[in-house]
Length: 67
Image (cartoon, rainbow, N blue to C red; front, side):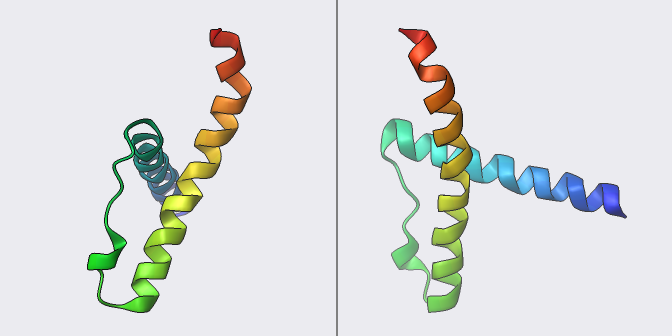
């Protein structure tokens, strides 16, 4: 049970980081204004920001090495 919870948590983080990476490199962002429920919209925006943190950390660490 714990292993499955960890697996799902890592999958959620990877998906969020993938969306954040797409947003960072292309500027394409899912439209949260299409979500009618205010609480779900806020949760979705927080989810996208959650993925931006690891992307920023990795890029700040390794981007200077690229030139």
